Image (cartoon, rainbow, N blue to C red; front, side, top):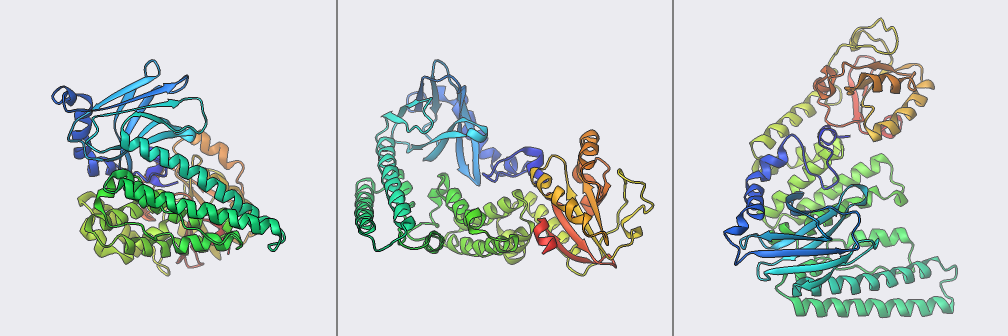
Length: 482
């Protein structure tokens, strides 16, 4: 769990912490939000009205309107009354694609709606109780055509995927039934490209054009192994994608494309080790930074999005790679607050460099009667520090494994530095982890050890040798025991 993730409960949209979000976009969004809620009286005649009706609604109470930037952020909202909502927007609202979210949590649901500034009324209906429902636009030609294409495109790609699955799974690639399936697959592929090009021709110059043109599908050979197909899709992932158009920052295209590119290294079917995943992320960083380098605004966006994202998900080694290899870019695009955070991280990297003497700290032993009162007083061939908390889900996956591993390696000392604040929860949790030395002062991220070791995410593992010199810093137990 990332330090800020813990305190703010943000999701994978990579919104940041410690008021970064506020400092970065507050003035812009405050201006926009003000007009959404109170400014419409001034611009009533030219205002843009968004109306939605949730047919059969029994569970949705509010709609949040979100704008894209580095992630997406709420800029307005409306209550759903009698199955309907209405938002009145100022005419000068920046054109783009906005997200209208009507369900939160694990079952998050939303619609992306084009607001082009020309259409003054946008209206849709949606079957509220359908698991997968597409809106029917009763006003807004551009949204009508975009969603009609998405429906057609989705059905077509589903047929292609089923054919691909059948062809790939059939035991005899030379069988007649496979040859027939391949011909059907080719027909569907050709039809896809025909529809794709027709839509682009008809909608050129619109936001709908950008949303379709920048999401082309790469067709692999259905006779090849799925892992090879996934690899080839990745090799062609950036084909025909415009990564240097600042206009597209106000759409979900850039955030989603980057996330989908990175997800390859998190695919469980690929069976990547922790080291392979980390190295894959580093290579992906280089590709992304290079792809977005053709425009200053998109280049800045890509760097800040990656920096914020890897910090948020606790991939500190990748964040360090990004910071150290692109520090000139960081100095150009970070604001004063971000630069301060960046400089702190750089100090931390230098302090925890491999071979450096580890910082000493007090041991507030809460589990056994330990004679050693500090790290340096504890004698061991090797010492492993693990920074964790009882409220961190990933920690609670790793800690039992570490406890079992510790039982088989009595020659080592494992110090579990908890960042908990709830002493009762902590005490109850460590009863199941008796193979470690537990220390906690219930000051969370401000505890002495966490500050001296520049801890920004949990779990974090730091391995020390007999002389208390740093061997390495890791984000998973797998990396520690390799």
